[in-house]
Image 1 (spheres, rainbow, N blue to C red):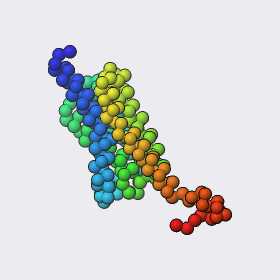
Image 2 (cartoon, one colour):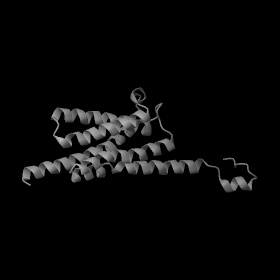
Image 3 (tube, one colour):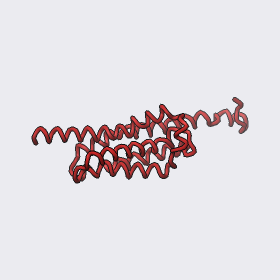
Image 4 (cartoon, rainbow, N blue to C red):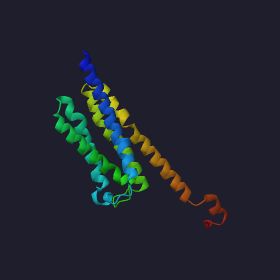
Amino acid sequence: MDHSTHGTHLSSVAAMSLSGLVLTAVVPGLVRLARRAALWERISLPPGVALPLLILLHAWAVLADLGRPMPVAVMYVSELVLLWAAVMFWLPVLTRTRHRLSDPGRCLYLFLAAPLLDLPALGAIAAGHPAEGIAMIIGMLPLGVIAAVTTWSWINTEERSAPDVLAVSAQGGVPPRP
């Protein structure tokens, strides 16, 4: 492997990792910072549209360039469209729009998305690009962390809102007054 091929390989590995990190850490961070923006209500998509859209566009962005390199302009447009889809994906989780998911819905949505978004990385590995595929999977790890934190938050919210079972039974089935 000559130095130019090695440099290209390293840059594609870094690009895959960075792409995954942008989708699962940077975009949700920015959406969370601007979660009260009125714009979100007007542009948000239902979760049943946003998730498949992101999965398909992500698969296109990851796998389309493996067979033969795409023109740079097509690659940039693909990345911009993918960023838009990532914003649409995160809106039902992080903002209060008409498409806001319930706590259990957010957990299911995120835990369903994690393995589905890793499928293109597995395709890259199967196509003979193991370093790029693994880099993408590693870059996507924040999604699993966010899913776990969301689940933990939901559990704690449920626990705080549930009446104290011992107090209820001690008072003959009547919940205690706060």
